Length: 53
Image 1 (cartoon, rainbow, N blue to C red):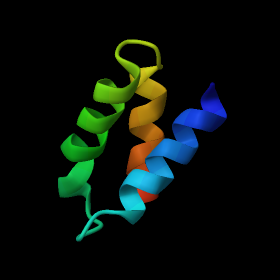
Image 2: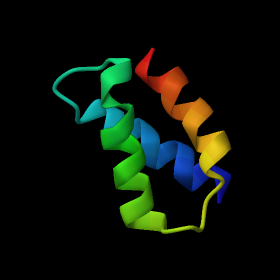
Image 3: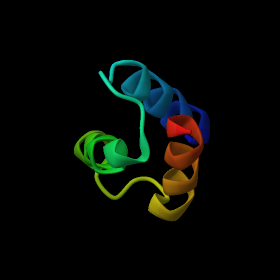
Image 4: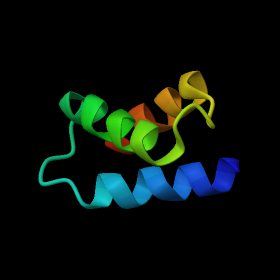
């Protein structure tokens, strides 16, 4: 669900040593590993950008 994906993004970003847009690939890769194609990548991209600041 949308809430699960947002929570996963928040947890993943919290675990990063550095919070910057450079980490986008790391977070998106983790999403793909966990959810495969079962999430809206375009929407998730926007959430990840917001979470990374």
